Length: 528
Image 1: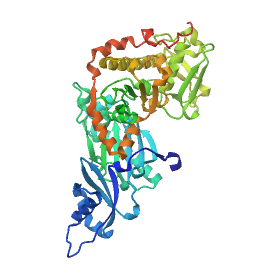
Image 2: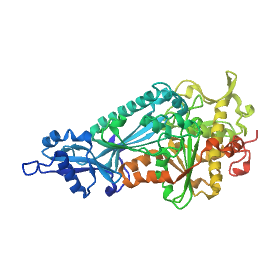
Image 3: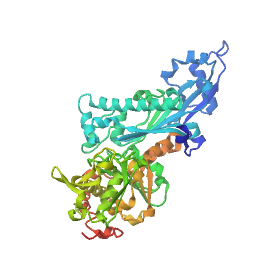
Image 4: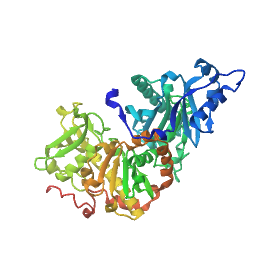
């Protein structure tokens, strides 16, 4: 497993904010009656060349016995924050100088974690798992309402932390790492997920004027959060900008490098919400809006998250209406993920099987169009071909939902660019992030009018930029601190009270748009 998963990432060893030091001290004597904690602090100060050392009270009580057991020769884990070095724990020198950390992307549907060797800039293993909070609410708004019930917040926090701890324990077993040797963590998620992780009440996030409890959590000790790693390990929680603009996008900005570029770039991360930021090294503006559920497989009856067996690519022969599909890992098809759904609707439109309103054209769909409970459905995969033994179909309401999502996405992009006074043509790079962005075909997204009609070379699919950003911040003090600087640099546009957004939304609900001149590269559909 390690051979497959181990990978390196760029970091500067001199820029580490979490370190392991070999500390050898002269044992106490009648001539040197310095206290054990003071003796350790003095040795660390000498090794680091600094006077700012803190040994926490929770560690002090155990030092007398542990230092004597180690004969005053130990490995010390420390971290820097606020220009001060803090002591995490002491270990036997036999364990070496490896410092392990956990990087986590807290998705509302899926959580992804990496076990990292900080001192070697190496990823040992990465795992993803379903967010257990889905059982209490498929969407963020439902979870916020659940949190407002007696015991609701504690329940949401508890099931999340328990699942994270189980997955960390699994990583530790597979990589032969003691959980106490995990001495740091970096975490990013949307604003509400960050609140659930920190056990903070998200009640006011969804209520005007949309105020979170905290925007910049900074560093919290793992023990205070109940994480199953060293209890004094620092957990750096990425800051959020607004109620729907979270640390996951801050991490994405850092990972993409757009905040260091002179040219104007645009980053979109589609999850439960569509989070978008535009700008360059001199300025950044961001916003977020509800455009994700239909694209995550959360709306279509046959929708599913991107994973083995999910249809992620579709082609339709306009002459014969024959549907060809590809599944992730080439497993038998179980359902359709967001990228496959976008491909499907784009191909249906070009083949003349749906019109510009997204309505099925019966004469072009032929026998694939059936009615179930009075609603038209298109059979994409016959029952005998599917992994479930049931046909994989999309209904008219499924397509209607996708068109609302794509209209919201395009309107978010249009509103943001209009606000900063630039056109889409002024964008040098268009980054598409998130699990959704790992599989999306920009050409199909342009065809349905979800993304602007730009040259394909301007689009760069990045995958999980949130996870990449927290991984970099875990080993780099500069990157960690950059998260706060980027957060302070962003101007946040609140779409919930933006009338221009609603005006543009209605025009964007057609394929590709009510104004076809905005999408000159999209060919007309086969004659209907």
